[in-house]
Image (cartoon, rainbow, N blue to C red):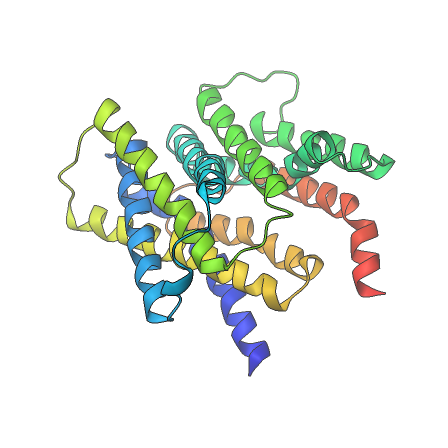
Length: 295
């Protein structure tokens, strides 16, 4: 029974995350990124707040000291607010498939930041992995034309790359921090909601949404954010990281399937080839870890 629950967590997270680019491109192009993220983060925060109290974790709700609040404020800014802001800008200003596949270079950035910030020992396979990963990135950005590249989607590509960079930094900084999963995710989204509220007031306005837009925001906030993150980190409690990496790579393929099935975009060969190259690069970086965990 426990194994079935684990697979439900993993598959649900993959579907929730993989559906996001198609939903944004299909239903939310009339909203700006500040409007989308504000309501999405707010809904995720409310959902997680009720989950904390339903599960009787209200005694852990308040943190011990100001350092913990500052930690969550910083991590929420990097790993949730900036990550989603740039990811959605990337999706809205390029194709959904290209932006999401570029975003999946974040494990490479995690390796880079772990080396720079955490002083992880650099190995030849780390360097090889990074070089191969960026070849895959170039294939996607140039649509396979490495010589005659010209693009009107450069803002989208840069934004998607920045989203990967920030999530890689978030993942590297969060490697050594342990706290209750639901509480942690709640505070990430709580602080992100505050940041989004400020940006909404300064640079945008509260929109009047259609039924389709409201439904799409509900899906993104409750499922792609609250339950997506919660189920994924729950899976980490039962599986080792190397096992989950295999499932993580399914997410962009699920995203491409949503893109194709909802007839938003024709899946490009360069996106598939670039994604495969990036996945190969990430596996090269993890060879020693995978051998260690399976021995």
